[in-house]
Image (cartoon, rainbow over all chains, first blue to last red; front, side, top):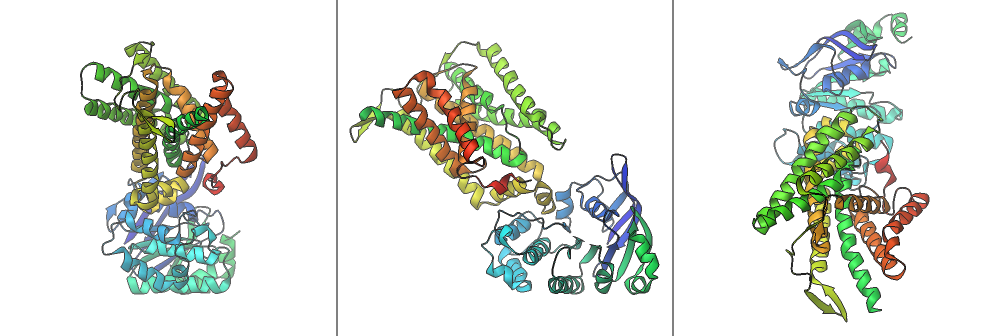
Length: 235
Length: 294
């Protein structure tokens, strides 16, 4: 279980995240909703260790990881797929996957893990020797997901996986994320601007506005929630 | 014709050492986006320390290993003092001054301990008189050995970067250190290993050049480092193969200009080449411009 307690993130005088608490459970998709600049990315980056925490604590399976550097959190079973198609663009598809595997604590053979990744997205197998920069946007997002999941993390943070993708690709990717949570028991924390989309796949949701929760609840409940309240959070 | 071939051969040998210096600069540039202008002083220190140790009666192998070990340790020190504190401010160019300053400081220490006069560097790899004749050209065995060692080291590094887990980690950190850390890559350790390895490469280059020139003095490293830098820029910084071509091109042009025009123009010509390359192809002959995009 991933637990965040009273987390605050500051950039100079700007408070991007203020007193946020959340829980992400195995096999459950938890959505973090909110407008652009509501603090979603900062929250995720604080959890994975890319931005320093001003106050509060982060626990992974009960263990305090607030002071650990990002690579130690990754080894402890946390994966974070960044927004904006962040990949090692000059490296080939296979090299990207290999790198994601090499330093992790995952056991077993890389070949088997690679076969599983290619099984989920066969197009990556066809492009395995191409540099990541030559992939289409949808293929890059598939590679990002595969790199995050190849070492079988217990926790997956996903930042805006739908951004800039064709609806049909978004559907494919969300179906895949749902299957990962159900079949592997991964705890998924999904940050999305597209609330309706995220709430279809998520089990539970938090609504973030200017760095603070304004509402939380089961996804079905949030989806039925007052449209005005949701849109208020986006303004 | 013989004269031209002699010059070209000498140029290739010296150029291979420039390539070695260039890949050392490239390695730390890949890891931190910083050109370590302190590298020249480490090159010099390795050669000076080796000369002093040999003079004190130490054997060749332990003396060389000590000199290279010292270069590696000092390079890690340069990272800690002159690179890391400044890299934390995004967009800061302070490292230009701090790495250069570290270099000058180390040069000052060397002058204090060893004196600022040139000291003799004994012949370790063959004698300067040994040669073989190939196609009517006298090839000095020292130059041949220097060429072979440099090329082997450069290619070995390329192989490590392409084919090993550690090499992939360096390329990943070069492209996006944040993303690398999320992939469980220990970025700090990768950076430190790059600096230590760059120190060893600089040290080897220093020993090889000292072997050819026969003397070392505290000012010895700076020119070499600048020529290595030119080689790196000409070939495309971060590209090992480019460094090799760039280094050898600079070496050959330098020797030909020195032989046919004037030795005074020998070093100047490298900068003319640098300016021409920067005007025509700023990413270098084999540079991948995407590597330089943040």
